[in-house]
Image (cartoon, rainbow, N blue to C red):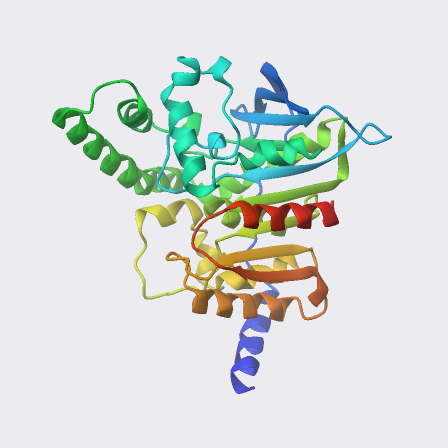
Amino acid sequence: MKLLLVYFLFIISFTADAYVPRMGNKCRPQMNVLSTEQREGYDCSYITFKTEKNEFISAYLLVPQCFDDRGKCPAVIMLHDHGARFDIGKEKLVRPMASVLENGEEDHIMKSSRQWIDKNFDGVYFADSLASRGYVVLVADALYWGERSSEDAQRWSELSYGMQPKTKSVKDTIKVLKNRIYDGQKLLYDELYSKGVIWAEKMLRDDVASVRLLRSLPFVDKDRIGAFGFSMGAHRCWMLAAFCKNVKCGVALSWMTTLDREERMKASDYSMAVMPMRERMDFGDIGMYLAPKPMLFLSGTTDHLFPKEKVEKAYQILQNHYSDSPEALHTLFFEGGHHCGNDVQKTIIEYFDNML
């Protein structure tokens, strides 16, 4: 009881002036459709759209071929993971369009994508799966991934998944590139910070622009837009749901824990570090911005990145913030590790079907 009282007083002490990420200026959605192909029950389009100022980013937009009696569909913005794999972004959730790849079905991006999906999603392209069930789905590249990745990341991909023989020289080059790409995260963070930009806030603004684009589409029901993310994508998901009122609900898979203030920052942390928030809040305190928005948090019992005992503590903090609306928050553990397998996908689909 004493610990809960201390925690409550701590929260009250800074709630009034709690940090809110800089969201930037709104820009009118502007989409260019570069290519489209028909798939089973839906169309997949390769697009670019405007995020802020004059910046356009690449994305896949999946649109069902059947709508409700108003010509509308629910929609989900899907947010890809980190995974220390930077050559692909949107391709971690959407089956790439061979027509937009230089070498079609044999392209290194296609092969990299398939390997990632087999490893993390039981061979299922989750965005395509949702689209086939009647959801409009948008998946964009985050800054430093996919088509927004570095030349080193693209070269690494070509050597790792291209047709070039894996000689010792090639393997040595792959190793050098991998280390340089990984270390490049800190360099990018510092470069952006020197210009007054926090990388994670920039990512959040891009994700808000994705929601804005969805809302502009005539076949999307503006009141039925959800968000999903796995791993880093889950971090993006609960940030987006917290600070974008147009997201009705969210599913965050395998990214919630308690903050270890003694642990040193790793390069992979910088894309998710909003330090003004971390200095005063634990991760579960995002609940103060989320409640009473419906949210589903899931984590594996044997997740090596997010140990169960730390996740349980974070869930308790979230639940404290949802004390006035406990029915809106669902926190679940599933048997398994850092993975989005078939059973987990079914749970997520059922949640969206109920909510959207």
